[in-house]
Image (cartoon, rainbow, N blue to C red; front, side, top):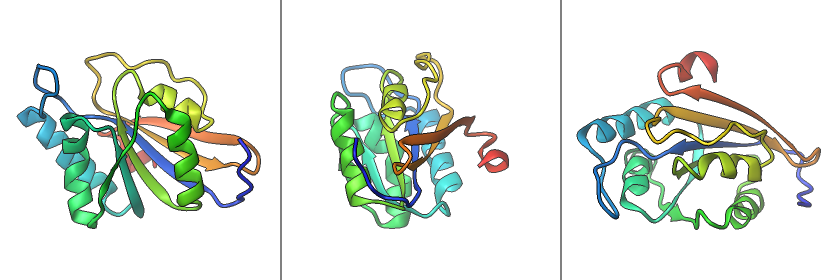
Length: 155
């Protein structure tokens, strides 16, 4: 990776909220409440772009915040993390971004941005928020993982 910026880019990475069963399920009522919690917690974080996979559950998780901030949800391919990293770092240097993914993608995505390995999320975990502070002039990301319930005290 050869990004020459010295500005710090902040990327919040979350897993989609609780979902129904099926091929491309929507959120459950609990999931809809969690999406509202994400909206409430990140509404003043300065987010300028939101990326989500194309699935209903990820789009619905991002939707309340996107509506509040009047932002379009940009789709990304969870199998091509490097393209998303390059897009974010080239198009949004020094900005704050939200990325919504899946239990088996959020850790790999965080690693693609330069964070240490937090390990894969258990299928039952929906409340982790990864905050990545990235300065590619030194090639490292400072990352922390908190739960949505403690985010106000730790960010």
